[in-house]
Length: 373
Image 1 (cartoon, rainbow, N blue to C red):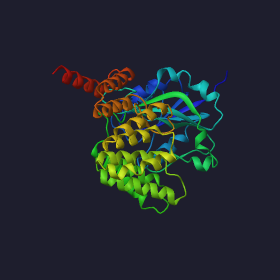
Image 2 (image 1 turned 180 degrees about the vertical axis):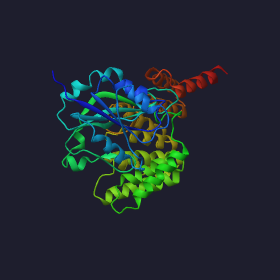
Image 3 (image 1 turned 135 degrees about the vertical axis):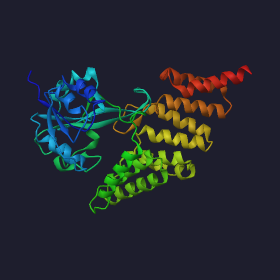
Image 4 (image 1 turned 60 degrees about the horizontal axis):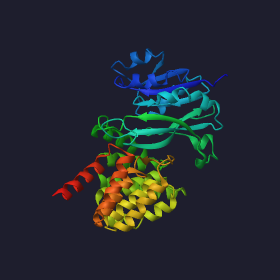
């Protein structure tokens, strides 16, 4: 069977610590590797050459989309797969990539992206989402925006229906949000500077405000993050577009972090009404109810989370909000209600779902300690 030709396109700079892991994961899945190097001074380029990659140099102009688009012109494949150096394609999935692409009916394909966030790579300590990582070459796809670049989907497929995303049963692991890689203050300040340059343009996209909010959130400047996420929501509404679910997830995460329960509980239902299949919003509602000491109502919400589950990755979903995190919070609520036996059952259920789940282990230990005294 003649499979379609796949080109891997990447932009890199000083990635010697992780680029080999990335390229090793895809070397049997793609037909060519195009590397745009934006000024590496370490061994990145030599490592890439060892994988027979085509290296093209690009003078960095503080514009990620320009750099990515520069690499696209060298790609000869029928399809483009784009990745970052701190990512890795699942080893088993790499062998099936061409089969899945060959059967694709759409021009844009989504892949299950797993963003690790803890100390060690663990799918239970990660955010999961379907991400647009493959597209047909030579039909006009290109990247836009200097930072947090995105594909020009609306230009290439004006009538694209996002509810009909074709998601391949493949996984890409992203290590960049783990504690050892977490974005430092200097990088966040650079990102904010680039984003603010976009913000002053009259035709800037409302996503710009969201991305500024996420940078301030990472810097723990929650008041500024809240200001910009709200501006982003208003901007989407002004353009007669529904604000994406990501904005509401960030908004209520900020409010809970700030302890602004009164500001959160009255609006969360409106967000859920917009995205009734988004388990994270239900989870936040449960946390808000828990903080308001509405324990019985909170239990009902967390039970709803477990019914919804967390397999719907069209939204950015924290692993556990539809399973072990929800069960743990049910245990907390049962303890507050004085139902120790029910609390133990909930904690044990959380541990059964995730054996290394420390919050539930510690809660059980405290109950055992109090009972023995």
